[in-house]
Structures are given as structure tokens and as C-alpha cells.
Image (cartoon, rainbow, N blue to C red):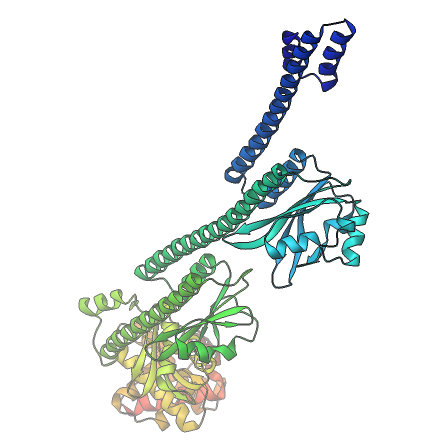
Length: 613
């Protein structure tokens, strides 16, 4: 018989199977002593059966608690951990529903965080004032409470909306234990049955253990959140430092390789992930992409603070050279605000911009000084020798003739600003520009002086001034051409022709009448007006000059000219056609004709005689 009870224990048979063993012995007529021994074994077997059941239940509880503790180290999602705790508590307590609430101290209430087995949405979103209902009392007092039948238990403060929610779930028995963290109640864990029943101390202890795990999970979640935030902050800081270092390296490399403002704008736009504009001190765009208006009002703050300032989604930084405001940087078009390290990168970019502009200014001033010195030497009569040509080469200046010289008088603009305007032309054409004896002088390779003078006048106008320009064409010796251009300028000024451009041919005899002329100037005038005719007669022994004098003397009548020269009229016509080839078709025009006649008279008065017959 004992083996039979052991078999039943091993097979985990129900209690009825144990009762059947005793009943069978009684039916079989077992004696009193045998029945007494069988009933003793029967009692021992049932106690063993209950002990095994309790051990298995305890083992399941410990396994669930162990699994929950493992979850705390393996799961970072606090909601997933709390849901697992509530679900396991329901399974081990054989409860109809379990739920966990958290306290909202600011609102003075405890709200449902996780439920398992709830039937209604109303209960899942229930919010109980602290001190009301069983849950509110546990959450407020920090002590466990249970009731076999909540609806009829007068120990708790009932509220209609709470009782309605409890009735909707058909709840009768409730066990609640507090969630305690660092001595502070942060919520409650509850198990309920939809039938009236007591709660043994083992269930209270088990639910309390789950509540302790839930509190640890919440604390871990807080610590993990803080760790994640610290890690995110550190990652962002590291990325910002690396980005700032990268920007610093690129800006330094830009400075070392002589980059300009455009390169600074491009580097900063790439590094700071936005669009960047560089404006000069007056607000004009120098480089980059212009931002919408609104940033201008913050420039003064950026200048005063020496730091970047926000302006309607943009960031403004002043490029300062000492106390001088040389430029303004405006960063705009970003999807997110600038971090502190990024703002320092923008400010470092403003400093680099100031250095670039100062360096460019220094280079321009040095080139202007050196170019001015070279120009002065050339205009004062120095012949381009090896030394002068080497100086010119270093400044990327071409001195090979033909050259064009322009001399300008400037109004409504400071002379150094006009010199800078002329210098831009000189740089583009590999020439020289500077100030000489109170006038702006421009020298460039090429034989179109009038085009050069027009370009100089328009450049000065673009800078806000007005220029009157005399021009001349120069060979290897620049001094005579400069003197001629200067006489043209003086004549234009005397005539009141402000803003005009003229070469010697454009002024003709006027420059002799208005200028301070001597033998050299008269000789140059005759040569520039009659030079081709004089050379032709000298080389071929012809009489073109004499024919010209006779033609003017007879009022331009061919027959009378022929009679005076004792030649056939056709000969006169042929000679005049040759003069047209040498002097141009306009030599018969009134203005040009006057120049030719005056040149003939000066030539005759200076002792010149016609050649040939």
C-alpha cells in the first residue's frame, strides 16, 4: 500500500486517487489495524503532497522573481519590464487582474501605468486621488492593504467614479502593496479577484517582492535615462569638438594658402550646415548667400559684445580688427539651433574673415605703394632698363610698347578711392596705377588710349565720383606720352569739359592755344599732325607738303592749285589722294583742316621748306 501512495505522489495524482486507496481497502475487508496503518500513511502522503505543491509553487515564484531580476539587467525598456512584472504577478497569484500605478505628486493622484487582465478602457485610464479607494490609500500611506470584498468594505474612502470603474471590472477582492524607492512611495502594485476570497501572507509577500522589483526597474530606468542623456551630451560634445577642430584646421589652411572671403564663406557654410553671407561694414554683400532682412538690427550687439547673436533664426557675428568693424557674417538656413561649440566656430570664422581682409588690405597697400613708386620712376623719364623691368615683372606689369597712358582729374571722390578704382583696371590688364602730381595716372599695355580713358572714367563713376581724362599713346619712353596726356587733361579742364575723355587728336590746335608750350611741344604738334606727309616727302622727294599749302591757299580749288604749282590738275588730285591715304579721310573736315593748316604754318615759321618739285 505504501508503494501505491508513493506511486500516486510520483504521478502527481489528484486527492481523489488517494481517497480511493483507503476506500478500496475498506471494501476489501481489511482489518482494523491494517486500516489504521493505511490511514496513517494516507495522512503522511497528503502532507507530502501539500508540501510538494508548496515547494513547486515556491519554486515557480522564485523562478519568476529570478526571471524578473534578470530582466532588470537585460531590458532597458522600463515599460516592457513593468508589463512583465504585472503579467507574472497575475500568473503566480492566479489573479483575475493585476495593475501598477504611479504617483503624480504635483497632481496629488496615482494613475494607471500598466494593467494585465483589465476588461474596460475606463479602468486602464483610471486616476485616483491619493487617499481614496484601496489603491489611493496604499499609494499615500506606503503600507499594504487587502480586502476580501471591496464594495462592502467601509475602511476605504469610496468615490462614485472609482466604484463605477470597479463594478465595471466585477472586482471583489483586492490586494495592494506600495512601490517604495529610497524611502519614498512612488506608486502601488495590486492584484484582484472577481470573487470574494482572502489573501494569505504568502501572496502578500510575493506581491511585495514583485513591487520591489518594479521599484528597482523604475530606478534603473531613471539611471539609464540619465546615463543615456549624459552619453548623448558627451557624444554631441565630442562631435562638436571634432567639428570645431576640423573647422579650425580648414580655416587655418585657408589662411596659410592665401584664401579669400569667398573661401571662408564656403568653409563655414559646409562646417555649420547652413548658408552664410559675408557683408562689408556698410552692409553690401561681399560673398555667400544673402539672408532675409532682420539681421541688420543685431549687428551693433554683435560688435559691442564681440560674440555671435541670434536674429530671427539667423546668427550674426562681427569681424573686428581691433575696434574696427570690417565685415559681418550672417549664418542662416539651418534646421536646428547652433550649439555653443558651433557658435564659437562661427566667431572663429569672423576672426579669420577679419584677418583675410586685413591681409588683403595690406597687400593692396603694399602693391599700391610699390606700383606708385615704379610708375613715378617711369613718368619722370626713367627708361625701362633691366632693373625697372624686373621690378615690373615682380608686380606682374607689362612694359612692352605700345602703351596707353591716362591722366585723370577726379571730383566728388577721395583721390585714394579713385586710385583703387584705377588699380583694379591696372591689375586686370597687367598695368600700373597711382597718384602723380595731384592726378590719377593709369598705364596699361595696348594702343587704344581712348578706350582706356573711357574705362577709367566709368570706374570712377561706379565708385561715386566724376573723372576728366586726358590720354595718349606711348612707346618705350613714357615721359613724353604722360606729358601729352597731361596737356590734354589741362585743356579739357580749361574748356570746362568735365567728365570728358580726349587724346591729342581730339583737341587739335586747342591744346597749343591753352597749354604751356615750347619748341618741343610745337615740334611734337607738327609731327603728330603732318608727320606721315613730311616723312613721305623726305623719303621719295615728292611735294605733298607744298601741294597742301597751295590747296589751302586757293581755298581748296584744284585748278587754281595746279596753276600755282605749274602742274596738271590731275597731278594735284593724285597728290591729294596720297595725302588722304597718309592723314586719313577727315583731314579736309573744318576742324581737322584747321589743325593741318596751323601745323603747316608752324612748320614754315620754324624754317621748314617743302622738298621736291
